[in-house]
Amino acid sequence: MRRPTQRSGVKVERRVGRERMKMNTLFGMKVMTSALVRPVPVLQLSPDFNACTDTFKAEINQWLLEMFGTQEVMYMIGKDTLVLNQSMLAKIKQSIPNHWTAPNMKLTG
Image (cartoon, rainbow, N blue to C red; front, side):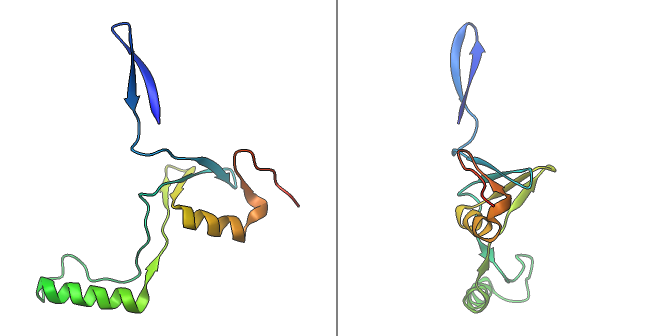
């Protein structure tokens, strides 16, 4: 997304973000999707854990990932904006369709 600015009488384009984000609402809160929000491991060793070698720590983290998998996350910005990825957005739309609004989308029910 670019925002024009004026400097010395010349119109300049300034890049605001690295990717385009689409705005939707959920219960009156703004919802933005971003590919930067990725699933995270459910369980892993702390980076500060130093009781073993880095190789062993990587093996344990890989085993924990295989056993417990990942979980979807979302981040809240301020009091009225959620940022999440497309797969989480699809899950929300499926589970609570009557409270979801998006550009060019009409509610039913």
